[in-house]
Image 1 (tube, rainbow over the protein chains, first blue to last red):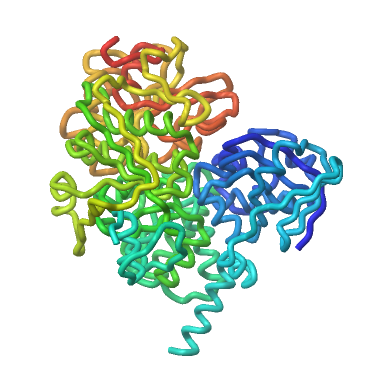
Image 2: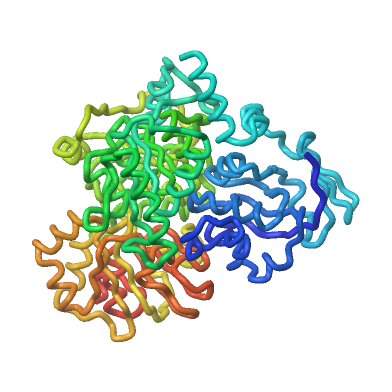
Length: 169
Length: 419
């Protein structure tokens, strides 16, 4: 999987209330959630973001609540990927389960600014910043998570398991 | 091999004799829960996977507590998804308004989550049950759906950080202050991907309500679980409530800890977390004098009977400051009734505070007490992120119930001895 887009830079500890405020959680419609993505951090974000753009953030991205609406909102807003120094653990799980690609890459964060042209090769874990002519190697996705992604996310994986169990049962 | 509580519970649920931090394992789940925000997505995933029934009807709870009593049509539609699913699958642990409470106060109260359990909840504060000695952690809706189907989940075994609290607590210093201090010291990602274990003589004499408040906020340090070894206090709480067998699990004497943090709490004051992160912690007397507009006493952190008693002790024969709205939200119907019987409502109403039916409501900026731009609240809740209780230009300060009540009277953030 490869992506190309503009960088949107955020700081440390971007919490799930910043990604999608709880006042909008009376729905799980991805289109509605997308309109309010990152609203309290940057009210213009959802209207300015283009298909394929990438969020670049500091440490502990996605801290706070367990709401799966957070990766849903980011994905539905058209973002291709989140690259952060580190991720909060529930968000990390949710992103994989929802099929939102995420990469941990401390080296890529500091030099990258909003507006930089970013290219991501997810299979290789390589991030290229074309604006700055730099290349970064991200931490590879753990093998277990690659299996989940190969199956097409957690629900597809569970469906496979159910078929297997029915087959042997 | 010597193991921690967390490792022992996981090993047992993975049918393993021993295991090590960072291993990926699959474990059986004793209890699973979702609420009116997270369960609709889980139910959608459950159906799209073609699942026909839940793994065990007795071990799945659906708790409509966040936007209930339904705040608008959209929330009513979400609550209806839970109700209909519970009817369709004949789930005994669905609790309607009038019976429901804030999930992490309700489930321990009903004896549905127990020591030694693995509990999975589609809510980040599921870690509250660590206070019972259960491995309890929050997940997203899709993970919950998978658990509802298979009764199993995969985990990476977390390394354990040990926290030792020594000395003697002063009056007005409780579990909330200990956990705020801890988060202030290690930061909001200080225990990311880790198990926290709270120990020491202070914890050994800490009432269950205070233990719940501590474990509840383990997630605010990024932790997967926040465990307390079960003891006679746990036994007294659990034995009347448990509906199935339970097991007390303790860390081995030579268990491996990734790090050990030790504090003498004897000099501690009540703590306050300033906007906009739970790690911005200061002793209450070092907080600048700023006017406040709202106080919220409630939530899965501090909406228990002991918290209401503490608030009543401060509010007795006093009035809430004319500028302040003081909202008191007992976390469950049982707590509500007990508070009423003890005469606490008389004190609250005399003080001109408002008492509400159980709901998560204002804690997450849902309803029942939303802040306007420029407004400032003191809350016994767990998060003070930007926009958490309403307008993005509002502010939330986190404290225990006594500080919140005292601040409601003073109109500014004060030590309970100052009113």
